[in-house]
Length: 179
Image 1 (cartoon, rainbow, N blue to C red):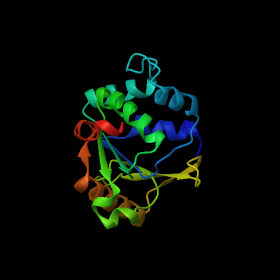
Image 2 (cartoon, rainbow, N blue to C red):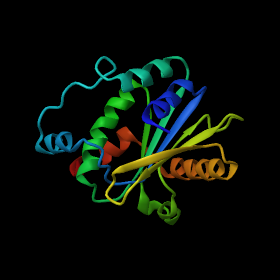
Image 3 (tube, rainbow, N blue to C red):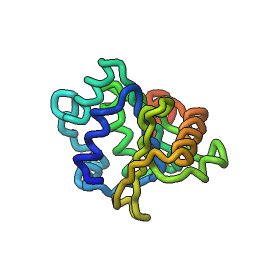
């Protein structure tokens, strides 16, 4: 699969898409943005007007589709996560539902598999895109699958993290001093 094929999945889903993120650092070319955020530099506008990704979320949400994301975090937060939490606010403003879960609340959270996108999870046409990263958080590839065992694992992990997660605004309010 290439990036164009991956990107097209976000135009084809029918009802919902769910993202599970487990890593504390993703090394995906945002190093300068992370450093600027940590210095307190003003960020460039990122909204549905300036970001095709956020515009896609907004348009599909208005059309009745659901975007959900849970990030499983360790404390203290990594520099990357402090940066990413600010970006989640923008995604949430576009219509994505964002939750955070502390990995220590349930031992089962330490056994989660790799990151994934789960599309139309509870429909006969469900599919998963597994996201592969190396130990330093560099993206190394992705795989599309409709394998029933993988779908079931991803559904179970989705339910586990949602059971323990808190919404982004509550998390930010409770952890304000750490950000």
